[in-house]
Image (cartoon, rainbow, N blue to C red; front, side, top):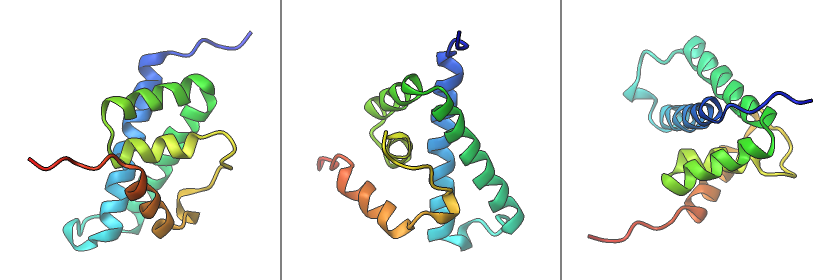
Length: 117
């Protein structure tokens, strides 16, 4: 019998994965904004991001469902990134191996457009 999924714990994994993706991507786009983010810290950030994604994968369909709920509530780039990384049929790709240009294009194409004020 599989262990039960603790929804609040899995939700937290989804939230932290989204946040860490944003921090990672922001750093790569603007490294001068965070000079303390050296190679060692960046490596740890990537490890933590991958660990949160792995936890969501282990939760299976419920992990994807929770990630999709987070995106439904907060339709932003980090949440969409997590949903995309968990889609069935998407093989597990390590963060360092991602084609960042393609990821950014996907997120831009699939994020809801902000409505002008």
